[in-house]
Amino acid sequence: MKHYDSIIIGAGFSGIYQLYSLREKLKLKTLILESGDDLGGTWYWNRYPGARCDSESFTYNFTFSKKIFENWEWPERYSNQEVILRYLNYVVKNLNLKKDMLFSQKIISAHYDEKNNIWNIKTNKGLVFSCKYLISAVGCLSAANIPNIDGLKDFNGEWYHTGNWPHLGVDFKNKNVAQIGVGSTGIQLAPEIAKTAKKLSIFQRSANYSIPAKNEIVNDDFKRYVKKNHEEIRGLVKETLTGHAFHFSKQSAMEVNDKERKEIYDKAWNKGGLGFRGVFKDLTTNINSNNTVVDFIKEKVKSIIKNNDYAETVTSFNHPFATRRPTLNTNYYETFNEEHVELVDIKKEPIKKITKNGIETSKKNYAFDIIIFATGYDAITGALLAIDIVGKKNLSLKDLWKNGPLTFLGLQIPGFPNFFTITGPGSPSVLTNVPIAIEQHVEFITDCIDYMEKNKIKKIETNNDAALKWRGEIEKEVNKTLIPESKNSWLYGANVAGKPNIFMPYPGGLPKYREICRKIAIDNYMAFDLSKK
Ligand code: NA7
Image 1 (cartoon, rainbow, N blue to C red):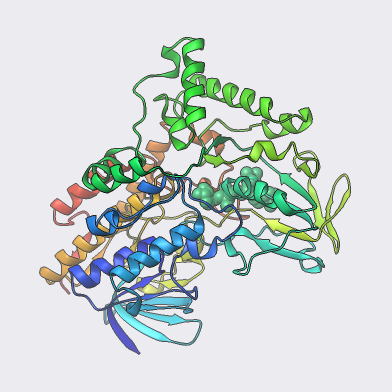
Image 2 (image 1 turned 120 degrees about the vertical axis):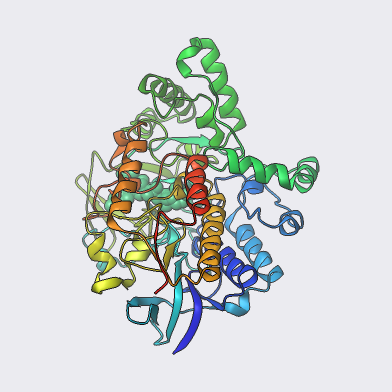
């Protein structure tokens, strides 16, 4: 068995920065164990056509190193999967991190040995390791959610989940293709499949809002601006609510007249991007304000989609705007105007089963060569719970979280000493521009471990009281918003059968969260239980 000071699970954005921080700043002997054959995490697996980040490129990166920031150029306003993966490889190469990464090693168990205060880890290839600090960098959206639809194993064609896309790609030419799901992924994917497929049938369960991305090539002026303004950009993404490069307006949608409001929405729609939801301060807190944006989006979408039935189905929204994670699109709505694209409303004709030849709904049999599941993830907790993690007194994480995740700050779990979770449940994570949330977590964890090492503290852990109080804090924050109007979303775990329905991320915004963490650090981490034994 090999012993390390720290072991990190996963080689995506989080794992990369955490490895660098522990190895270079604290000189800890650190290893990443990664289940993929190479680094990249979510951006290693998500290779489906059209896979692109919805955060603007110049903000969807690390900001901790001026040199790394300035020596990279993003070619497009939003980066596609291939470019982001290239970027992560660039960072890893520059920091010489690959030598401390072990690939194709899926961790199957991590057990805490109370007597020796170490974590014992086993991988699917039979390797065993131990470490003092165990750090989860598994990501929030990495455990694929393949719906349990009868008959899938009998299907004679090919089927894929978007989060686990074949590296050699999928050929849609002359194929009849079904796409199930119209979340961020499905909305990006459909226009791409439609380019080559003989026929594309899009199965929609819930109508989803989508704003034009307005992707474009980044011009030289903007590239120069980014290179020259590292500090300013780093400062900006640290102070905005969601870690993006825009502030929310201070004005309510109710404070302006109909004409002014429409002009504001039109301008933001034409500009494109996630900033759309920030044009008024109260779109996610005031239902009257929200209704105005819903009406605007409906009108826009209906002006694009020519088939009236499709237009009605695509805009049959059952939740207020932005109470689920907002999506961006490039020609998604336009895709429905193509002859060979059809929309299947599975609220009206539910899927009964998958047959040898395709999909049977309550109305008819559809024949397909390929079925694509764009059905999302067992988000936020799925990847962690897939590992057999056992803490003090033989407590398994599965048992502790059977009624929903319980953490303090989304950083630690009661009963699991020296175990940290980057962007864990209970932290801002998926409600933000994630690399910015990751940097904050990694820096907090690094400073905390530094403090422990310098002060000869052997153990840090949280307790049930702190975690329950934090859960209350999350509830308090989410109840200030309209988000509870959409309890059937993956933010509540509703997309996975049997998963507890509880809001998982912290919705109070990054600045507030950052401040809570900062005060805890200044207070020498007294909000945790520290032990010198
Ligand atoms: P999402 O946002 O979870 O979307 C999944 C889609 O799949 C959504 O339309 C779901 O409908 C649909 N779905 C899920 N299960 C089923 C079943 N059983 N039958 C029919 N339709 C189903 O996942 P994405 O991958 O698009 O995006 C996740 C995040 O990853 C996103 O925020 C990006 O940042 C990247 P529903 O709405 O639940 O009715």
